[in-house]
Length: 110
Length: 113
Image 1: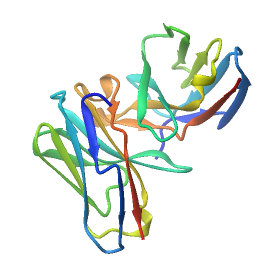
Image 2: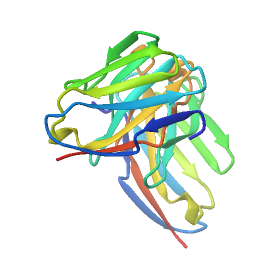
Image 3: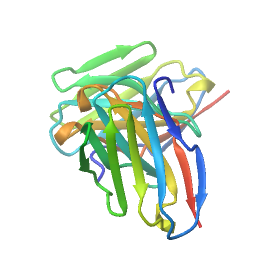
């Protein structure tokens, strides 16, 4: 069963706008990760935030984690058409396994 | 993707036949995983390995078996393929399990007719 659930399921924005995606999970975690998947390709790891961290940045990506609410958000600033992809959150569980959500489809219009 | 390759990339097979998918890594990572991706379900873990000859079941393991006789190779076998196993299969590797990001292969699209 999915541990993480992303919201919204689909997001369409104009190039240059910011995109915010949310992930909620159910049980305690050691870390939460975000991945991107371009059409027809494998997933690519974007960023990892540990349970004792509240915010992390990587280039145009900003991730926050609120363990009290069991939620995370991924912000992509100044979006580009190349950011069009599906985005997944994943949480670590027992025995070193990641559990993935169903994903968010982001469309960035030129 | 660098360091991890899946073969074949595409396969069509008939119901009832056995099928083996291969994942090969050159990173010498300890952990290897097989996931399937289906619309509306995201990625679901089939089996994983935490070392040579050390494997365990994931969330959707029924109808699948795995083997890892060498660090670099992780094989997924569909013992008797069914139409419900039509899916895209992804292999992933990691040195430290869920404590770090996974590296994914490009996937195998399997169609069972």
